Image: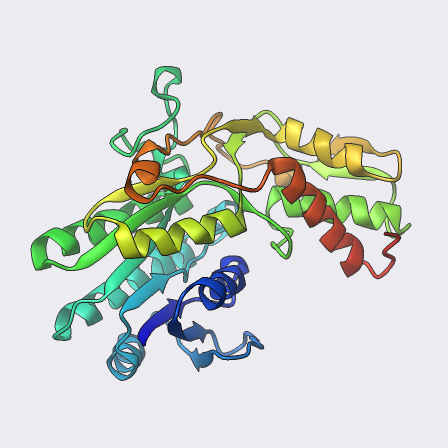
Amino acid sequence: MKKALIIGAAGFVGNYLIDHIQKNCIWSITVTKMKHEDISLNGVEIRDLNILEYDEVKELITEVRPDFIFHLAAQSSVALSWKNPGLTVDVNIKGSLNVLDCIRELDYNPNVLLIGSGEEYGHVKESEIPIGEDNTLRPGNLYAVTKACQNMIGNIYANAYGMNVVMVRAFNHIGPNQSPRFAVADFCKQVAEIECGKKDPVIRVGNLAAKRDFTDVRDVVRAYVLLIENGHAGENYNVGSGKAVSIQEILNKIVQFSMESVSVEVDASKIRPLDVPVIEADITKLKNCTGWSPLISLESTLKETLDYWRKETNCWKG
């Protein structure tokens, strides 16, 4: 039986990836978390790991010796990257380098998937949309810079050492159980609290003009498994829906699902110092490599996410 190692499994994507593997792959699964995190899963080996400690990473990979390594561990909030750039650099660059260098030192060659971001493209020109993998990178925030660096390092290790490293640029993925640090979950949580009478009927928002490429997290993890099996070493692959939607349109759809009338106010604390106007993926390369395409509609994902937060508020009316 082949072995999968998921580094950083306590985050939003981890549970969905584990669930997909358990249902669709005959693999044993080992996952890592930080000591303060909790994971409760059946049929999975759970290990504590500080990705910034090289010796811990090397010991884990040596013991497990996985065939597939999904590197999910990251500081993934753009907003937090402005507030804590040092942590973002440490986790996203040093942590990834620790994983790759440990593998290089060991005498075996697993398939590795590094998860980057559509934010790496940054300030794209109108003529460059949709964005292909060969597009010039012009990252517009510190998070994006660290992910661009991570993927460049992955490309170097693949080419210089013959390692099976595949890089992903994942565009915005959304779904139930996502942290309200992200816009869609934040909007849904606020609507659920309004419906419950826990807050005034006002949704506080940041920049609504930005356009982003949103994909259901369950479609995203399906792409990850296909790419770790079929992707070409040293290559980057966009993972997204292939269609940009404004944050305003997302908000409008969520408000339409609301059972209460709400108003909208701009909250200065939610405005980023620098925001990229449009990010939209060209997913031709991914489709040609794996046959993947998104299956879950945006409306379905938004409704499920809102229902999730309705349940979390403990006043579910459905």
